[in-house]
Amino acid sequence: MATQPPAAEPDEESDVERRNADVCNVVGAVEEMGAKWKLIVLNDLRDGEKRFNELKRSTGASSYTLSRVLDDLEKEELIENRKEFESPVASYYALTEKGAALCPVFESLDAWGEDWL
Image (cartoon, helix red, strand yellow):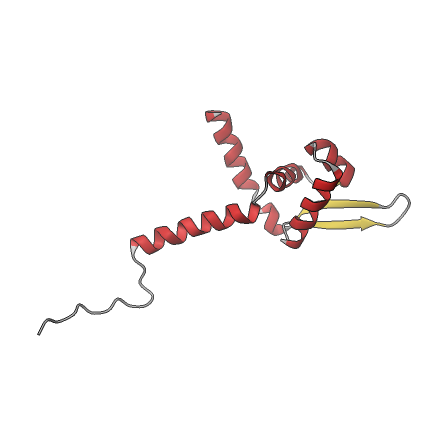
């Protein structure tokens, strides 16, 4: 009778499983960021809080596109919307802690682009 090798411990991951998990994290992060406009807005908010019209000017997005993207980013908890109801009513957008955690990624992409593009 042939003996079977002992089963791997359930908490032991193979190198392939670890690499696949890394790939899944990268793919998941890219999918979370998704659209070009999300990246543009998140990158623009690295400089700090901005009003809707400031973001519209600095990103070049249409009002419809910017509004849709801001709603999505807020739902994904990457930005927060602070409203002032005094005249004139204003909405201010800023990165959340989750969104600010992307700043090093943008800095790395910026450096890579400077070197290679």
